[in-house]
Amino acid sequence: MKKKIISKTYLRDVTKHKIMIDTSNDEYYYSVKKIIECTPFISYKNTRLIDNNYYIFELIPKNEKYAMRVFLDDKKQILEYYFDMILGSNIDEDTKVPYFIDGYTDIIIDDMGIKIVDENELDEAYANGTISKEDYDLVKKTTKELYTELKNNTNKYKNMDIIKLINI
Image 1 (cartoon, rainbow, N blue to C red):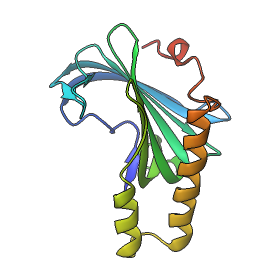
Image 2: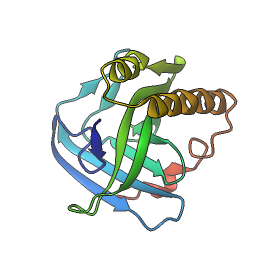
Image 3: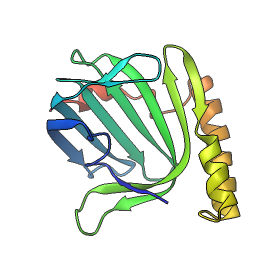
Image 4: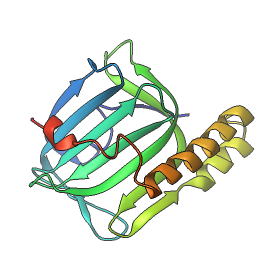
């Protein structure tokens, strides 16, 4: 299982950035990364998701089994939502930064619609004993419930006004 510390996610080809992390909210942790300098990241559908002066907003609800990442351009226009199914989250003892345990399966929302991805990674993790049957079932259940919420536009985190939180 992969522990993902939000101060480090999606920065592989970024050479300069600013980050703001907030752990004060009772419902969630969040971070905002402003990319200053990078090699652009182009998605599978040929959309530029990470580039100079773009933003990455990450939110980890404290009482849900998913994390939300939002990619925004230099004008703070939303390009894509990316939801990671997670097995847990907390504050890392060493870095004092929020993290989550990746649950393998993800949901992407972009201009092409809602898509569940990487279910094969979850199946492989279960088959090789990396995760338990209980965790496997939890991720499957979370994926199904979240997909329904997103399809019905009832997910409170996706419906948040995140632009007001991006003041970095």
